Amino acid sequence: MNKNDVLYLDTHEWAFIEGNKAKVGISSYAAMHLGDIVFFDLPSVGQSFNKGDVFAAVESVKSASDLYMPLTGKVVSVNEMLDESPQLVNEDPFSNFIIEIELTNPSEVSELLSVDQYEATL
Image (cartoon, rainbow, N blue to C red; front, side):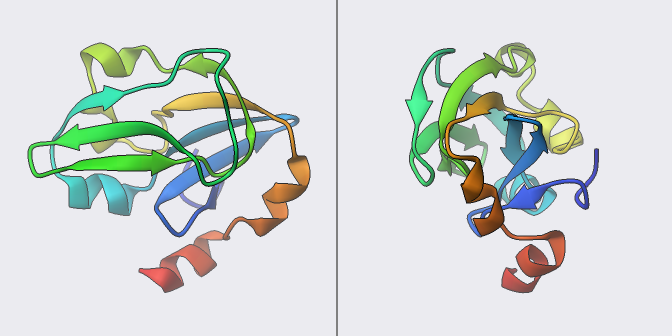
């Protein structure tokens, strides 16, 4: 997966849509600007979020930031490797998703940005 395979929020989160599920992560731009990531405060499987809700937090050596849900859905898996190795997102932000959700409002996908639209916001 790479930056062209996903859709974006202007707050630097991405969603990779597979049927009625989406993997969610942060863009390479966000990972680079955060610096060395040292911790993720992740949601629990089964939690539900609306599009735009804060679903997690990320801490780096520079700062802490909230992460916003790109689509409404229920968390079906969490990337547990990030508990031990949060820096994986720095190394490859598109291969290392943060959570996977089951979509509850798939029509929202059309509201996300393409890579060209996202890069124009940077």
